[in-house]
Length: 288
Image (cartoon, rainbow, N blue to C red; front, side, top):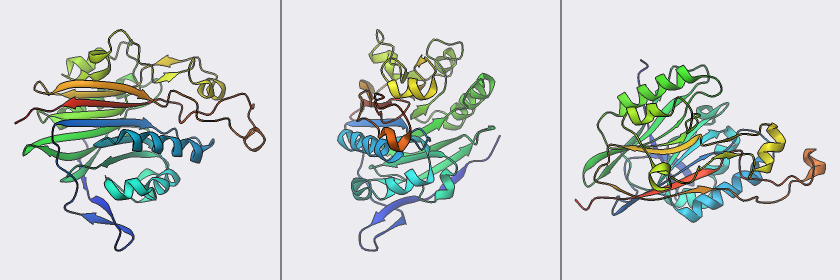
């Protein structure tokens, strides 16, 4: 198995007007943990308008931790220039090379001891990216993943096994694009490995599709793929003392009409923030 690599914590310094490595800062976790996940879609189609919409949603939600997938160099640059990110969040990387051609990113406003990256066996450069956190002086991990895409079930299964082994018994929350359907043959592996899937735990009667051609007309028009699946997840283990409180989809409404003349698409196609919907979820934490 590949070796993990430590990554520095980066915070923005108003004094130097630059991102710098940091060994402190952030706020302690208290009574709740609120996390978010968003696959930004690496396509260049209206990328800045879409990213601005995602950032506005995330700012309104104010999660303690954010996991992003399909981050590209130009989207990373825009995220790092965002005022609220600079003011409140530490990030897992600032180098364009870390997300070239695309990759994952963690933002956190809580105290973080460090970041870590574990490469997966992958033909697509996929990895486990995690933040080492604490709650009441006990270790906690927040991680984001983008598991192997397309017809790659054996690879995804091995990646799930590796991340589960690596995180071990430390209470952990993992968010991201798992690329497995909630009704497919791969899904039971999550439960077998001890992971609690927040959506069916709190909203068992709702499908929670995060890729949904019926709601996201941009996705349907550009992909021509009539897909409705719950690829994106927020999962956790072992958190028996934690109480799941809420989970919601983000970005389910169109943000505007694209510029048909500039982009060459039909003007009746609404613009959405991504081809995926995002997620935000929350737990009540134990008092001691």
